[in-house]
Length: 104
Length: 71
Image 1: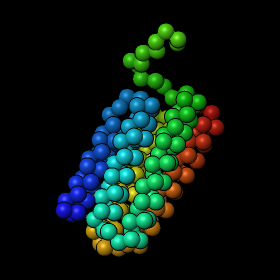
Image 2: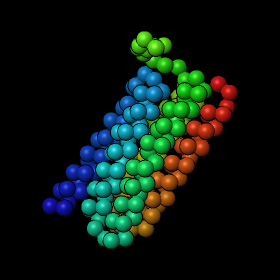
Image 3: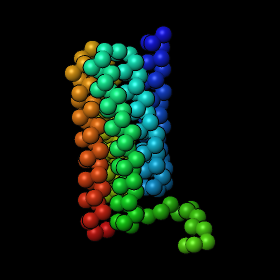
């Protein structure tokens, strides 16, 4: 049972990381790509680590992986925000079909 | 990983390269964790924790560097 849950978590996490890879390759804009990496890749890595913790239930491993998951969840939005801000300040081009709305 | 390296080499802006570093670290962390379970090497999970923090610091440092450099 734990093997099924652990392998399922690892497979779902790997699928999310693959989706983030497709997004990093195909999306038109720096900001789209930052969004794909900051959300999908971070969640995928967390799921893979949780699956590894389920598959190898030794206390040392589980505690280390839980700390790693917490660090990933805390630091992924910060790095995504910092990449987006760096791109905006250094003048990264927007996608050509960006709709600016009324405020310019 | 190949996608990350390709984006790092091609990336139109510097921020794209910082983003590719972030994603490449994510792939690296996941593969090390799976390998640690597969080879039954619990010492490798410490590597996972260290690589998580190292990837964050590297991404933020690269982003600051891109931000300060002239466009």
